[in-house]
Length: 102
Length: 102
Length: 102
Length: 102
Image (cartoon, rainbow over all chains, first blue to last red; front, side, top):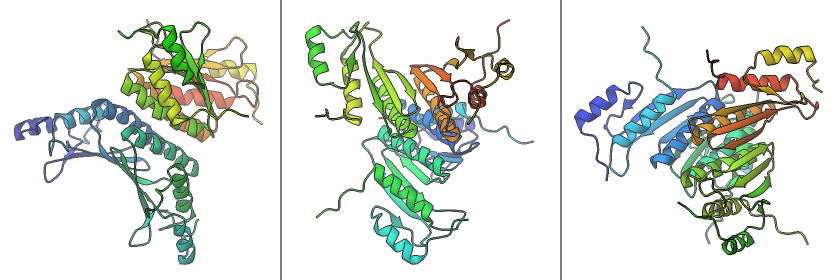
């Protein structure tokens, strides 16, 4: 069984995922993305859906028109694991976080 | 602009949509569906996505593995309209509500 | 490596797949499906696409509006294998061949 | 009804679509695209599928693993029209033609 990230590893991993928020309980990371419209949002979801199946690791996600909210956690481990980090990275490769303003 | 359903019409419409729940505030209907797995759930979403685009009326929906939760409302009207009823019917035609037990 | 079906097995397998045609060279099976429109055709393709990825066995397929033509063969084996039969069965389970007229 | 492109307009339009080939009969343009794998190819197709529906103008396309071959023509007009040019441009915006070598 896959183990939850220890606090040090979690800190390091999240440093590379600035678009993702850690939930208050520390068990989930989430990111909200916006697209040019519903079709672009859904095509993005399709690409992620294939990757989720390939990894057998699926997001908890919500879509409203051009917005996709993605939450990642590993239910079997009861928290964040390398699986979540890997899927978050895949998503960031598809849609890089906007460059920080300023 | 499309008008919200009056109470009588709403009652009649929902009678034909037994799988859908009305929210407490009366502004939204929602249905939860389960599929044989993630792929079946996502293929269903794809079919609905095309219909949503065609009608320019999009659901607020959430997917977790084999489960799809769909909420319908008409933001422009501030509540339920015939657009929601029509999309709910389309969804029920794709995945008929389970026959009531007993 | 997976082996090509021997003639007896091929005959038996195709008996259960009446909607599929064997190519003249005996290396490929193909089926044409029609749907209620483009959206239904593409949603069907999406469901098959996930299965193809899961099996790491992909169709050679063509879509024109409401029509999907699917050809199956196993390139690594240079002909028909159990992989093709299994994917054809999956497709037939999704869209059963029409009952024969008369 | 939409009219076929006259020769001058066709020449001008195709100059801006260097990744597209004109068929010998002059009635169709086609482009072949390759992706990082099947999932990327299919997600691309999903994006184009929504656009095709939106425009009510659908490609004749074929997919084999990471390859997508797209042919565009306007059946109602019996040849190439502005609809084909517009859809080709949309596709090129999604996947820009590779920069010419040298």
